[in-house]
Length: 248
Length: 220
Image 1 (cartoon, each protein chain N blue to C red):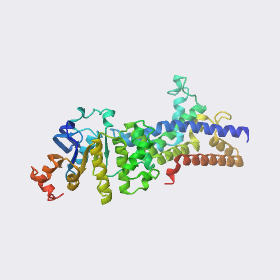
Image 2: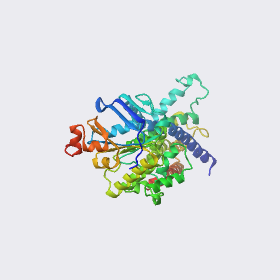
Image 3: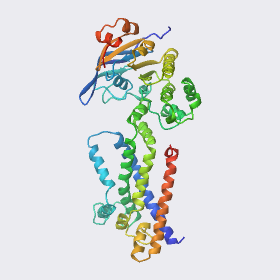
Image 4: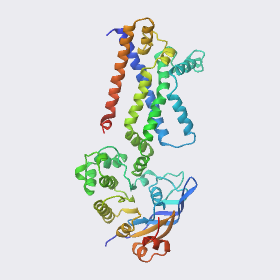
């Protein structure tokens, strides 16, 4: 399969910790995410996967340590410059759409960037997710799968350098799961968009990712290329998780 | 229509309209801020605002009277931009103090009713904090319009404060509510009832206009 070669680290995390009310939920010694790769982050619920994505989208700063994006540090009291922040976006597990039309929802991110003549881009993004005929429908009338595809379209239209996906197919039917996986895989193949996929579905990680990281109780237990991760994990806890033996 | 009645109606609309405009300009951003931000002392500020929402207008009238009177804290300074007592300007100040906590309080409740994940997802799309706050306000627009309606309702029908700081001077500070009080005292019940119906009509039309502002989202 012709996948983009990873080269430089887009993200670098050094001794990053995140605490809420003095409770540490994330504690990562070192992690690099490379340009153009699909990196899957797996782990049981409550492992800190979504917290890591919020940090990676610069929604919250780490409590300690350094998170670098394009060698720019994101730390407490240090805002990530807007032009860098806008290179990254997230598709969340539970998409929150604005109570407007589907078209307005997809256009929203472009309007934030003062791009107002964007009808063609918006329509193309909707076609991409198979919702070209639903542009004028009210967003709140959509099914769960359709809403998630609108959320994906509003991310795609921004042509992000990094797309973070937080359990994007959880609770969706097999048709929507396959469709979304196909779209994000194509995005990586054709546009070399860096994808960070958070999932507790190891099969999905195996299908899509080039590298996989295993997060447990806030700590990064192991990262490896996908084949090694699933065939010869170096940590017994990773092996237990991959075999489905980990109780959570 | 009688010229005097027209003047009374126009002054009522002007005083309450300007007060509502100022209240909205202060109250909506304040309510949005209190709804979205978490900071030390927020509970205290909210408690103050809730107290303001239930403050008797006549006490606010007394407070403004004492501030603006010639021997008062502000009146004695004779600042050029401060209105004198018994002027429409003084009535606007009193009505603004009455209505802005209502606008802010209801706006805060409306903003807090919007799922906090929405703001996070809007930020993730590249919004600045200001753009995200505006997006949340737009989502809460039905509640924000209710906030404005509550602010308007609190002042258009209010009599204690405007009587105290306006003085019900014919042709200068007489508004519908103070005119109703005066005509009732004089025993002109028919005129008082007619003025009351005019007041009801204005309130009804104003609320209909606000409902139009809520637009289609009200019916969804």
